[in-house]
Image 1: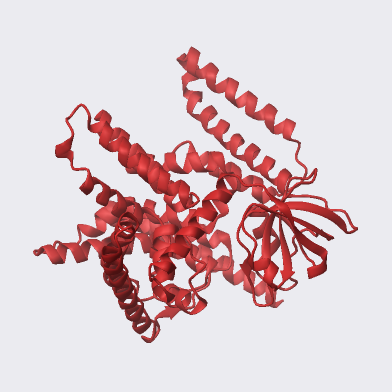
Image 2: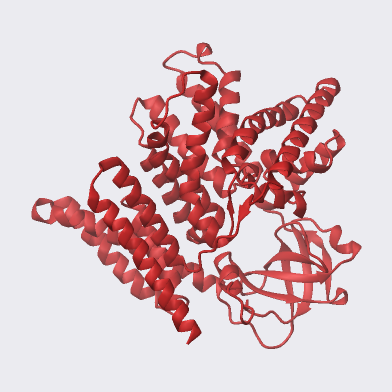
Length: 512
C-alpha cells in the first residue's frame, strides 16, 4: 500500500499537468537521484534509515510520473494537415454504430499509434477479422471534444491510447491479402469461434449474450435494452468476468481436484494446476483488467497457502494494482479498473464490520445476510465513481444481488460444464436447456425490478474532487463508527460542509 499510493499519485499528477512537453531527461534525473538515495539509506542505515521510507515513496511517485509521461508522448501525435495513405492492422472486430462501422487500427507508419477509422456500412466490413491489414487514404485528426459538452471526449480517447480518428468513404479503403496476427488477435479470433460454437449448440438471444459475457468476457452480443435493464437494477457488475467468476471457477476446479488426492508435500501441484488453468483461461479471453486483478490476488493467496505464510488482503490487492499499473499506467483511468479495485477494497475494509451488525440463526439467513453485507460494502466503494461516471444510483441493488448472485453461480458452473462436455450431444443439450432457462429467469426478474418505482435515481457528481470528498466522508464515518471518537464525525461533517460551500461558489460563479 505504501508503494502503490505514491505510484498512483505520480500518474494522476502527470495526467493533470498534461502533455506539456516535460523533458523526460529531467524526470530520469529526478528518478535516478531518488533511487540512489533509497539504496544509500538502505545500505548505510543509521541516521539515514529514517529517510528510507520517504525516498522509496518518492521513487515510486517519480516512476509513476515517468511512465505516464512516456505514455503521453506516445499517444499525442502531431498529424499532418494533408491526406495521406496509411497501412494499419485491425486490432479488434468492427464495432457497429448507427450509420457506420468503427475500426480500431494500429498504424504501420513511422508513427506507431492506434486510431479509430470510421467507414460506411457494407458487406466488406463484416468480413474483417483482427489481424487483417487495411490500406486507407485520408487525413487523420487528433481527438476533439464537442463544444459545450461536459464530457471531455478527447481526453477520454487519449487515456485509452487512441491518438486520432477519421472517416473515409468506401472507395478510400481496402483490405490487403495479408494478416499480421499477434497473440491478442489470436485470442479474439478464438473467442469468436467459441461464440459461434455456442450458437451451433443451441444458445440464442439473451441466453447467448449473458453466457458469452460471463464465460468469454464478450459483451457485444448484449443489446441496448438488456444492457439498460442490468444497469438500472445494479446487476451489470455480474456480467463482467471478475472476482466472483474467478472464485466460482476456482471452487469448481478445487472440487474436481480434491485435497485428498495430494499429499501435504505435493499440495503445491494442486495449487499450480488450478493457477495454470485459470491463467490460461484469462489469456484466452484477452486478460481483462477485472480478472487480471483477481488472478494476481488469487496467485498471491495460493503462494501464501503453500508456503505457510500469512496473507493480508489489503497488501495483496495493492500488489495487484502495483503490477497492473507498472505494466500499463493508463489503466488507472479505466472505469473497470477503478470499480474493480474500489469494490474489493471496500469489501475488505467494510464487510466484516457490516456482517457483525447482525447474526442470523439459520444457515439460509447467514447466507442471505452475507450477500447483503458484501453488496453494501461494494456499493459504498463504487457509488461515488458510478454517480460521477454514469449519473445514476440503483435503489434495489440489494434485492437484485440476492436474486442474481446465486443463479449466476449456477450459470457460470454450467458454462464450464458446457465447455467440458461439448462432445457429448445429450449432455450438451441438457446443459444448454438449463442455461437458457436460468438466464431467462434472471432477465425476467430484473425486468420486473426495473419497473419498480424509482428503481434508478439520477444522482450526478460534477467534479472529480467531489468524488475524493465523498470517499473521505465514507472513510471518516466508518472510523467514527469503529472508534466512537467525536473528532472523526466532526471531520466528516467538515468535509460535507466544505463540499457544499465549494459547489455553491461554483454555481454562483456560473450564474454571474
